[in-house]
Image (cartoon, rainbow, N blue to C red):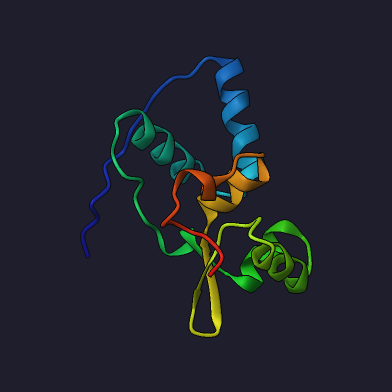
Length: 116
């Protein structure tokens, strides 16, 4: 089975590597996923979608270390980026991390991940 990925070898300054490691620790993502998103944002390309980029309610609650009920409360208040599919809630890890860092992903994308 082939892969559509190629290796990238770079040398980073110690302070930049420290920042990258801190971002990885805060986001709970792999270094590869963080670097891909950073590059994609700089190159105006959409980030690659990985299976773990879409989170269900249980995964969001575990990531935030809160109850599912607390997440649902934020969603129904319109303060949390999520979309309902039937009886299930879904969101992206990127949207959750943006929300956690104090940005409001729902304000910039009225038709994006919003309660509803």
